[in-house]
Image (cartoon, rainbow, N blue to C red):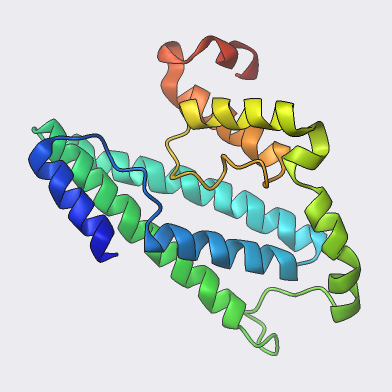
Length: 188
């Protein structure tokens, strides 16, 4: 996290764009999310995916709100990046607590059985966008996602399901409104 904060400090002084480096919080969030997804049955997997999408939208709007009051654009970018880092770290910790949940408490989300987990492992790998639509189309979707997504990259990855990537494209296109690229026209 120190390296990310140094980049933020540099950006505040130099006025550069918000850094796109994966922070420790980003890496922890992605690691914990993937680990938890692999442990859940299909119903809870879908619920977690929906919750994560809603959380990403909340985080982006919350941090945009915090940054909009800044008069200096460089300071606004720093405030927004710091907010994203802080909320991402908190979400990573939430997911870690769920991973650490022993399953005996009622507050723990139900996991799939051990036999179902091993049987489902190949199916999880097959659900990548690359496997769904091929490498070329997955690459195109990832490129579109990267152009419009305010997220710190987790959804824009060909290893994710195409539905996650296209949902992120739709969300980014909606946020950009009239300034959205032409490929957004059919996605609203």
